[in-house]
Length: 73
Image (tube, rainbow, N blue to C red; front, side, top):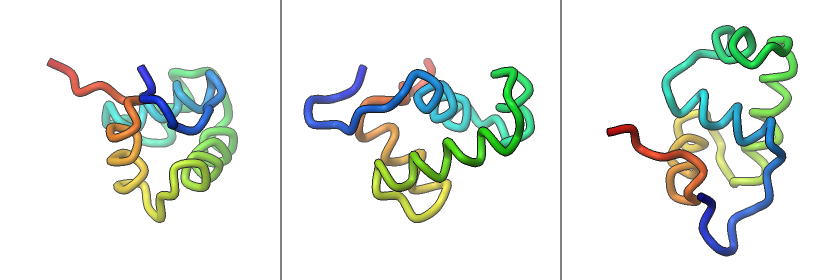
């Protein structure tokens, strides 16, 4: 669950962020979400802007910090 003050994400952006947080690569994320690879890349670009991330690793860290990604147990 996102923390108060976190940016608003679309359902697809959130699903993409969660998938990348699980360790799926772009191709696997696209296949599992049933979208084109370019769509995943577009979502990642938008997510980097919204979360102020400069790389995929910082995007995942920001996803955890904002509560969009949960650490699996």
